[in-house]
Image (cartoon, rainbow, N blue to C red):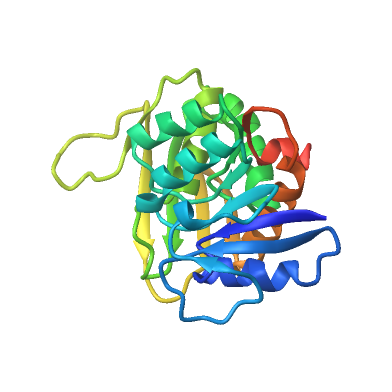
Amino acid sequence: MIKILMHGCNGKMGRMITELVKNDDGAVIAAGVDTYTGIANDYPVYESIDQCDTDVDVVIDFSNAGAVDALLDYCAEKKIPVVLCTTGLSEEQLEKVRETSEKTAVLKSANMSVGINLLLKLLKDAAKVLGNAGYDIELVERHHNQKLDAPSGTALALADSINEALNGEYHYVYDRSQVRQKRDTKEIGISAVRGGTIVGEHEVIFAGTDEVIEFRHSAYSRNVFAKGAVEAAKFLAGKETGMYDMGDVIQF
């Protein structure tokens, strides 16, 4: 039985994962961490990670960027593997993630769904053909009006996947309102929409002469992310020090 520490247990994703694990014979939520403790849980909840003294095998993190540094310090010190799902991390924090992976197992993914991770793979193949054929590349992501970071971590991951396939020759453009010039052939435009209760939509457009190819992923429930996070935690528990991603879990 894998014992999980749910970091951000009383947030939307934390509560969803808690309910999901109740029906999982291979895992249990042994403890949680959240600054909001006004929700009754079947496990102990600590206001900060430093207060946690419950023995666990792995951490699932769905919190916020401000809480990640302390979590990484905790996991590095105690050698506890961590599934890091929080997005919007700074460059300094991403470097800290890499440093932590030298002391314990870290699985970081901008998106925990199977579909998105398959899309990351498919886009590399498409980019090698269409990008090299001169097709313009644009990304549009849509999320609910409560999301804090823009563009989404998933949109950046999709762009990075494309750019990696194209030898890193492209740069990202987030706003064209301040310039009046033709589109650069080596740019990837990334647009963010925020509204309503949209769970998550990502559209990748390859626009060429007289034809357009589109890749699209829509999440209709956060449950797809919760399932992925739990599977990632079960995979990561007991793994050797290093960086992992959902590709290691799914193994397409």
